[in-house]
Image 1: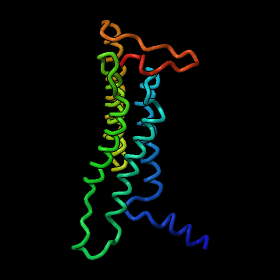
Image 2 (image 1 turned 90 degrees about the vertical axis):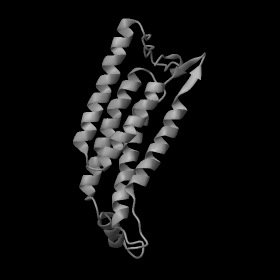
Image 3 (image 1 turned 180 degrees about the vertical axis):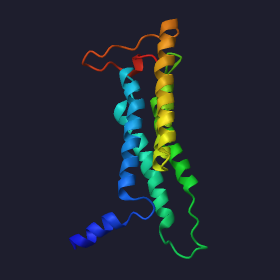
Image 4 (image 1 turned 135 degrees about the horizontal axis):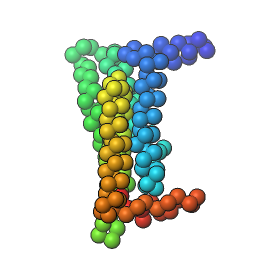
Length: 178
């Protein structure tokens, strides 16, 4: 019985080898973490863990779609695998999460950049799951650079306030400016 379970767990990878799938998931986790780290430093409601999980979930959905295409669901004319539908579902799910992070208070929109970062983490996860790691890495570097450099420039020019300093107790993220 243990052999059957082990065979099922290791032999069920038809489209992507288990080591490659694991590497893609880990890269998605790290790259999502890079975006989340920047948000964490700004004391935003969606930080390191959230971005890591979004990127890895998106990568997993793409890996699943690649595996589903190889499965037998009946006659050739009956099955119509469409990986784009899964990408649309990932995008909709991440958009739902991102919209939850965005709100208005006192006539000001808050956490819009955090929502956009969550959306990017999802896109980066999709790229990782599809095996497009160089593209995912390039996108992550660009996103982190934009969020860091442009944020610094905005604060320097006085168009944005400085984020609250972390003092051990996490201040209300809603009070920290985007």
